[in-house]
Amino acid sequence: MPLQDLGWDPFFEQHFIPFAAKNCYPGRVCREHKHLFGVLCETGEILAEISGKMRYFAETRNDYPAIGDWVALQPLPGERRAIIQGVLPRKTCFSRKMKQEYTEPQILAANIDTVFLVSALNEDFNVRRIERYLLLTYESRALPVIILNKCDLTEEWAERVLEVEAVANGAPVYPISALTGVGLDFLASYLLKGKTVSLLGSSGVGKSTLINALFGSQRQKINDVREIDGRGRHTTSFRELIVLPNGSIVIDTPGLRKVELWANEEQLENSFKDIELLAQQCRFGDCQHRTEPGCAVRRALEHEELDEGRYRNYCKLQREIRYLDFKQNQKIHLLEKAKWKRLAAQKRKSDKRHPSL
Ligand code: GDP
Ligand code: ZN
Image 1 (cartoon, helix red, strand yellow):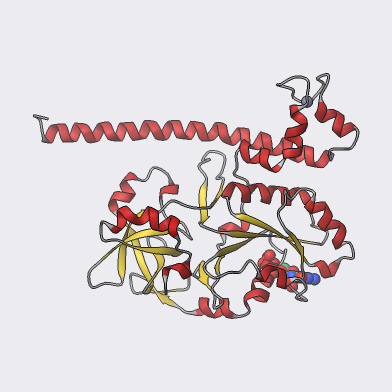
Image 2 (cartoon, rainbow, N blue to C red):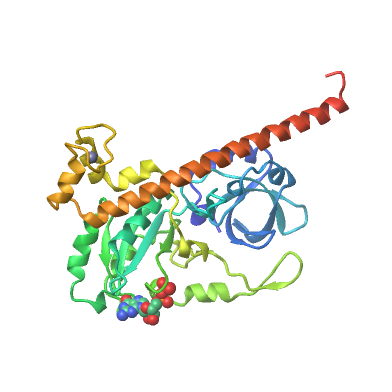
């Protein structure tokens, strides 16, 4: 399969140059086993393991490959296996914040071009949740497409579309029904050869139904193939990155299905530009929008020009982000310390070996 069909482009080509000089070849991670990765390359899927050097120098889990990553592979003569010598920079990347005490984000998937943010037009419909998913998508740098599924269940889908468009920052919003097939044509224009899409949304909104409606039974067939892992055992782990017969690429990982928020203040500002603009009009530069005189945010809330729920969501996200920033800074500090310790130990070792240096 040509690399272009897997999403290879000049960006990756450029970053691959130093690896090409070392006789490596490129591949894209399509599945994760315990210590091995399934990697798609020009000759098909191979198994690969990361090099000892990479393992040694990895400072965070982000230095390890994730589904969708492009990696540099060193061939093992006579084997359909390879050693991963490096991960190419990610064009886009989805991460999940970890539990409180461990706030380094975990990479869930890399190099997704378009994300379908799926919600259902039923009693669970929630604009605030869509705002969170949007924020997460901006943080990933992928292109968001908002899908309101189950439009067959409500007469009020047009009102809902307007409600979502009001917070969507220009992202397209499509009311569809995965069940009846209404609106699926719109989505076809995002399923392009060599482009990677993924679906995000709470459980029950209809992601699996939509995948089946869009791709039919193709996906199941591709995944039904049982594979043999590096130790000669049969595995049933399914491929999380799939090239569909129409040429588009789908990433569907269990982790992505339950993402949480991981973003920073800058992205928050981008998603809530209206509130940031208001805040700039407050009399005091450090206005907390509580009881300060001349507060433009409070004024807008009182005149119902700013939706109370949207504002509360903004405040909640802001608190969350500040807390995460604080934890992350602590973590970076600890990592730096560990790195210097390691370098110092290495130096001591080499000093011992070469006393004259
Ligand atoms: P997932 O958890 O997001 O993968 O959701 P599923 O695809 O499993 O769908 C959850 C339920 O919603 C199933 O019972 C589907 O039949 C139903 N469903 C999915 N899409 C639609 C739709 O467009 N309209 C209606 N009425 N039901 C749907
Ligand atoms: Zn204010």
